[in-house]
Each structure stands twice: as C-alpha cells, then as structure tokens.
Image 1 (tube, rainbow, N blue to C red):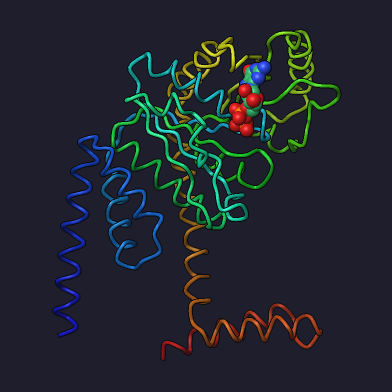
Image 2 (cartoon, protein in one colour):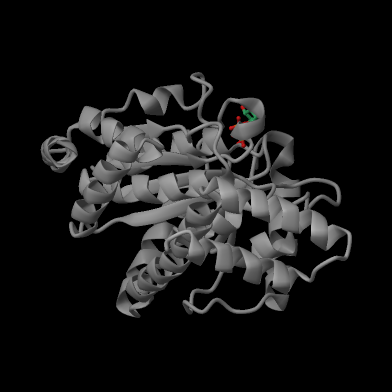
Length: 340
Ligand code: GDP
C-alpha cells in the first residue's frame, strides 16, 4: 500500500517537474516564479521537485554574466540597479535581479521586499525581480539564491544581478556565486572605508563611488583617486583582472554606461583567458563541499536523540567534563548506531 502511495507521489512530482521545466525553458515567468518558490520550500515533496528541476536546468547552458552588487544601506544600490538595468535592457538583454538579505530574518522583510524599490525597472518586460526569502538563515538564503540563478539562466536571462547589503558575511556568499563583483561606495570626510571591511574591497572587481553629482562631484573624484592608489596594496586577482575604480550618479544616470562597458570588457577578457569557466567550476566544487557538510549536519541534528546528546555534550564541554573531540566522537558513534 505504502509502495503504491510512494509510486503515485513520485509520478505526480515527476509530471510537476516536467511541466515547470517546460514552462521555464519557454521563458514563462510564472513557471520560473513557481520554481523559485519550490526551491525555497522546506517540504520533502518540494525538495524532490526542486532537486530534479535544478538538475535539469544545470544542463542547460545559456551564456550569462552573473554580477554581484554590494554596498552599505543608503549607498544607492536600488537606484543604481534601476539605471543600470534600464541601460542593459536597451541592448536587448534580459535581466534577473535577485537579493541576498540575511537581515530579513530579523526584520521579517527583505531588501527587495519594499514594493517602491525599483518600481520602474520592475515594469520592464525584460526584467524579473525576485526578493530574497525572509525568515531563513544566511546559508538557506544563499542556497536558494544560487538555485534561483540556475533557474533564471534556464529561463533565458542573460544578466543576473545579485544585490546584497554590504555589512556582513553575505558578501562572501555572493562573491562565491558571481563572475563579477561590484562594490558601491560613497565619498565623504574620511569615510572611504565606511564600514566596508578591507576583505570586501579586496573581492571587488570594480569599485564605484556613487552620488557623484551636484556639489559632490569633486569629493567623489578625490575619493576615487584615493581608492585607486590604495588598490596597489591589495593582492592581485587570480583572474588576471586589474581592479578598476569609477564614479557615477545613479540618480542622474551619469557614468552608468562606462560601468556596463567595464562589465563587458571583463566578460570578454575572462572568456578569453578561460577564468570565467574555471571559476564557475571551482564555485560548483566549493558549493558541493558546503552542501555536503550542511546536509550532513541537518541529518544529524534532525534525529531527536542526537540533538539531545549534542546539548548534553555542549554542557559537558562548558563545565570541562569532556573535550570537544570526545564530544564529537560520542555524537558520531551514536549517529552510526542509530542506523543499526
Ligand atoms: P540602497 O539602500 O543602497 O538601496 O540605496 P537607495 O537606492 O535606496 O538610495 C538611498 C538614497 O540615496 C535615496 O534617497 C536615493 O534617492 C539617493 N541616491 C541614490 N543614488 C543617488 C545618486 O547617484 N545621487 C544622489 N544625489 N542621490 C542618490
């Protein structure tokens, strides 16, 4: 009886997968949205569909450029994406805008959740905007964003923009899923580093000083110069790309075309030297390692008796009764026993 039920469920999920996959490859936005919602779901049946969909979409090789955009709140990310996105669509390209926003677990919202953001771009038929899921931890958001990238590419999107708030760990996650990493900054008295960690600056392929308009132009140019000289002290990129600095006004649409041209130059160079492809393979391999360890962890924690033992051993470690290594050994032993 149970086998029969499983068989019917498998058949049902397989037909749902095929139906959604067909929709995605036909560029149907509602199928794409449905697929992303499924990848964000925690239900076992959805997980199966999601895994099958990702497998199918991974084999579709649409040439695309994945661009990460980061910067502190207020730097002008959404204003920039509006201008940048409108410009890119003029060259007949289709853009997907995704967000990685771990702060959403605290606020219950998301960086793209506010409907007033990127309102104009959202109406462009060549653009797909998807806020990050709220209420998930960073690992979960990053995983579904990565899966969303593959789904969007299978749906024929040429440029994938991934927005993240430049204040924490999310940049490293985003950097590990994009080809090109753009950091937006502001000019201002002594705030060239304005909370942006040096590590984030080192990851950037292009650093842009935004709000270079009105009385701020000279200040922005000065900040750009300072940055340019600071770059000499940064380690060179493995990709062979020489990091650039620029100024722009996202609000007045100045300097946006030069930024787009830089992205195109980057893509051309990286395709020629083979780094774009080898970097994506490396990212896949890193992703495999990360998924393997998180899923193992989930599997272990998912067993109530093991989860209880973890808590007990944690207390014992704190009171000096056992070493962390012994604690882990006991947990692995109990986990292995749970299968016998
Ligand atoms: P985000 O939080 O990084 O997404 O920043 P927003 O795009 O929401 O912009 C924050 C504020 O800065 C808004 O009031 C924008 O109008 C303003 N802003 C964004 N870009 C520019 C710019 O290039 N010049 C000026 N003067 N203001 C800008």
